[in-house]
Image (cartoon, rainbow, N blue to C red; front, side, top):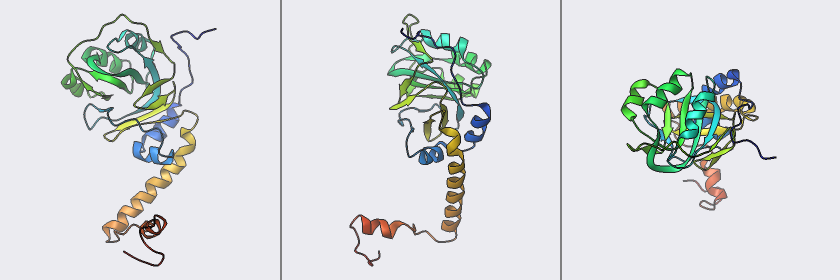
Length: 227
């Protein structure tokens, strides 16, 4: 039997894991996840200071139609991140100030869409994190069926409902719900290692310790040769 278009119930990353994972930059999480899960850079924060983290509430729409986003706003839970597969369409905005006010009022953690938004100045004043492919003043239709709570694809990354989503000025990373907790010790270790390396650089040690061996392996230098 076919699944219904709207799946209301799915397991989410727990609030505790979200809080622990949110302290790490998406760049750190992407590195320890094997450099996987980073969303294409065309999907970026509406303003550089915007950040978000939370479980994905997935929505799939037809280009230029936001009917299912309205349904998602009625179903999403506080702390959720709306993740909208808008097919990369930039000919009209899928959401604007009215819907973003509703999302904020419902306690959502933010909105990510592979599509366009409008009312960008009002959204900035609202202090609500929004990631999109850009803006367009044209409004959407509200007529075409889509899906909620199913896997979607945004910026080349598959997002399952309940997966962990994190975004900052660098962009977005998505980590599978079942995997995120196991990455947290690795993220802490990497963060500490990077802080130590930056401290060394500031003390004058600017040479990358791995560079010589990598150049030999790549055939750029002979064994025993130095830069």
